[in-house]
Length: 287
Image 1 (cartoon, rainbow, N blue to C red):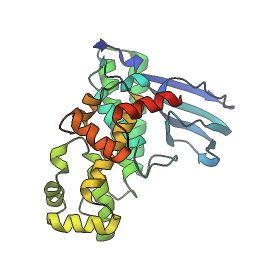
Image 2 (cartoon, rainbow, N blue to C red):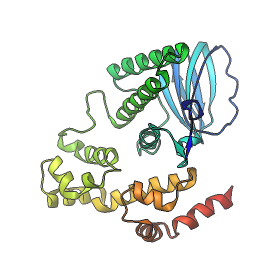
Image 3 (cartoon, helix red, strand yellow):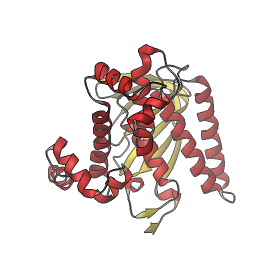
């Protein structure tokens, strides 16, 4: 296993400009764009998004944007490289970063917009950005460990805001009845890597209802069984890792709580009409 420095996985850019020059397409998994000051518009996929000071945006590897700057803008960009997805590297925070980034990028309600809904969280994020910049400039003892911890916190705050429907919502709490299904979705996505917490009886206990009531309610609201939804969500993550990482099928099976490689292969083929290996090979053939 290769020991890598933080700089191999996480890069920071900060620059001030009145004209946006298209960024070269590089080997990044995703980016977070912070608007330190200035204003303008971001064009992506035929849509225009207005930006202002203290906004932030999450950009996936397949999204290419253009920026029309109205007021001279200072950008701070955090770039996470594809090495974050490598199973051959040793970096203590990698697994946490990977899980949080997948939660953010694969969230069903994710759209490209300012990622902060909560004013207090926005203040927190910008304090984190300030201290990351300070640590990175001063490079004092343990600065890389401190930066890694602060990045972990930032990813969690962004994930929470993508989940929240409004500033008052909390990621896991007893909801109003009309919002119950969204809270169940949030609970599943938040705990997707812990099979113990995804048992129907455990979910039901969390929401203070019986297992049968939970199952019937979920089926009625979504047309899908709770078990099936959890399975499909895991398969979505498996597809992403097959396409973007060098994790083996066995490793992915272990990460997502399948019994073993054959269990994942059987389920994957049932729902995707291909084995994981066939799916990965088909992606390679299309490139």
